[in-house]
Length: 278
Length: 241
Image (cartoon, each protein chain N blue to C red):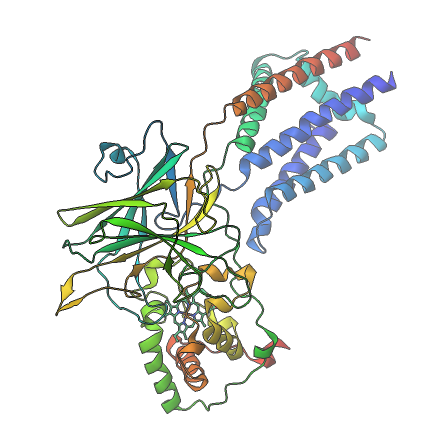
């Protein structure tokens, strides 16, 4: 009978260890939340077309914005100590094919030189948020910058790797439209998730990308444009991800787990009862 | 409730409370997986101890068997048994879900804040004497170049601080410059964020590379002004030994 007892004990032991494990898992610390403000832009998955050139499409209002604070650019010359745009609300959408990103920010006046930009790291190499400037101990990669200016009325798809290397790309894949109303700019950028250009960021649903923002107030003060070139409002890197399609196989695994656990209990009790009878 | 199993249960609970709540008062908290490993080892040891010392497996596991089969149980014990039988599969299902569900959180940022400096910056001494004039000059330069980010009060709360992640260092916090030597600051100010090694994520840092704008003499004097203004003093070689 020795072997039966050992079997029973082994089963009981498994159950107890599982109990201890479960209590530890339940008591483990929750994942850290972002400290203040947002840390990531989520491109919400939708069906049908994305509002690629409509900053005022009603569907934008169904998406909760991420909000990022902005700083006057004091990281490299020429610096600026005070800027107009203090923060930006960002909403995003994709349909598996195309993406659209809406930037909404306060700017009291509509000016020809008002401008906005979104920056991405490209490929696997890390790039510094300031135009992919050279790093001393790490080999950096390119950044891809999508630039919109009111007077251009369109987007420019650009590349940089270090200061003074910013240039428009040969392949222009981005479009943009801006609408100003009552002191608020709403600018929407759009592009296919994937392009054939190796200088472009490729957005793959489910994968995280690094993103940063910049804004220029083009108001004319004393005969000169107030913010231009490196004199702008900036952020450093935050995250962006296109929502992956829902994966229903998860629920199959959950049901499988429940069935296996219940079956385990059933056979365990039966085995112990039989052991006790004999 | 005097059986070996009850004793083991009490031992495990005591162990858990110690590892989870008491130990973190003295050291860093343990990860849940490590706590589990320690408890599993404790349980296995208790098993071996009781089964070797006379009583045998039956005495040790008997209560478990009786509980599970429900023999001679009524009232609370009976209800508890049903509860265990219902909760266990649900727990397994919930675990499967949390393990497989796609995470909505961005990648964790385990950024090393104070990585080792390059060799040529180790042990450099400030070549300028700590005179009131030098401190004054350092504070003036600090106000001009550093305060937009690190703050006029050395607290990391300058007007440009909000846009940056990681935020500019707070020099009045005893965890920053008071932990460091002057030579370390000299390296950080000269080479900036882009001078950091990969584990410190240089691509995220807004700290400028001041060597392209400021002469070494200014940097050494800024260091003096920074310690004086923040009410901290640099860590010295003597403290290292």
